[in-house]
Amino acid sequence: MKIKLSAVVITFNEEKNIRRCLNSLVKVADEIIVVDSFSSDRTVEICKEFGCDFRTNPFEGHIQQKNFALQQASNDFILSLDADEELSQKLIESILEIKADWKYDAYYFNRLSSYCGKFFPHGSWYPDQKIRLFDRRLAKWGGTNPHDKIVLSTNSKEFLKGDLLHYTYHTIEEHIKQINYFSGIAAKAAHDKGKRFNILKLVFKPFWRFFRDYFLKHGFLGGIRGLTICLLTAVETYSKIIKLWELERAEKLNQKPS
Image (cartoon, rainbow, N blue to C red; front, side):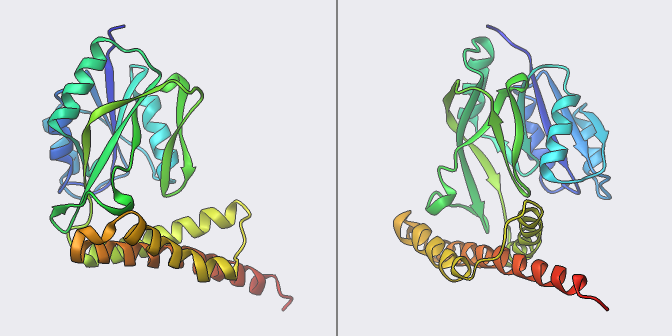
């Protein structure tokens, strides 16, 4: 079955990344929908250069914003990218083949991330398989903010050759700032779902995460980048758990009679 494809992207102050993303999408998409949460940089200007269908929507969470973006498309067949991602040439070729002969409800592929200027095909960062090409009638964004994922209502999916290129942190400082930001969101999401702090998780989960990523998944092959990524990932794991404790503590203090 030959299909028409809508590409959807959510943005907020993405002038450093969005041009690269859109340059790859115009090669495969019949329309490009950008949902922006009121950027103050050149994101809007750059998107208009590409003739995108540009819309604004208040940001309530990654999952909520991406599900809103899905509904803005005029086609049911969706390619969803983040602004800091782009399609490799091989993945572009694979998607064009699928457009001419769509057989499954969803397609997934490997994501290759860069770190401080160099791609990192080690540890838990690769192959990091993602479903990003799908029929929206059978899929939606789920997971726990900020770590969203596509949830399919069927098991009909197929792997595509080619990497989704992901441009992450340009500096260590960026990574540390993002850890603080994301761990706070994740702790609040866990608290809202009724999850509770556990001292054993605080002690063992960060250690296990480092051991798994650095040794079992060969993060050590990435040299200083590999060591840094695996250590900071363990720090992020610790931060999520201790911030959950902090939320519980604040809740108990607020409940005490004055």
